[in-house]
Amino acid sequence: MPDGGKKLPGTYLSEKDLRALPGLVEHTPDAKYMFSAGQAQSRFLQGLREGRILGVKCPRCGRVYVPPRSYCEYCFAPTGEWVEVSGEGEVHTAVVSYISTFRERMEKPEIIAVVRLYAPGYTGKRDEYEFPGMFHKLCGVSEEDVKTGRVIGMRVKPKWRPPEERIGSVTDIECFEPVKS
Image (tube, rainbow, N blue to C red; front, side, top):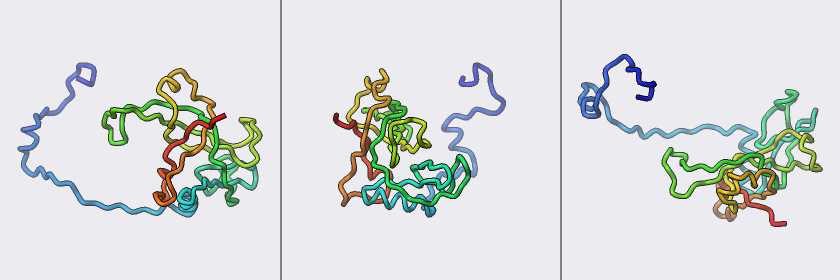
């Protein structure tokens, strides 16, 4: 038992008994959901469709946010100046995932990382800017590279889908791949 051997109160039902209950409705709704990405996210997604990664810069403290935010989370000033980041950056952290987004085991695992993007004017000092980063797939690296930590700090760049396949989504970037030295 998942509760450490204790039996929880209630009546345990078999699948057959559950399905025999009066009033049980088995129906999969055909629900369609729509939501607005908002002004900042819409511009960010449009940039991805164009093959550009856009962020916003805080006018007060200079931090760059990717994905963009409407206000600076550090000093609470409204952001507004849009900047394009090169897309190059370094791997901040990474994991090997054996489970899909649908919670199914994958035959071939994916490597997922947080990529710290280089903001305009970045000179290599880690504390120079607020963490503009993207959570995305890594390609061109092995599970062993992740398990041994070799990917941490690795320079990477986006691998874009062809322009005709882009739809204005984070998936317009197929993955981030190592920068060849």
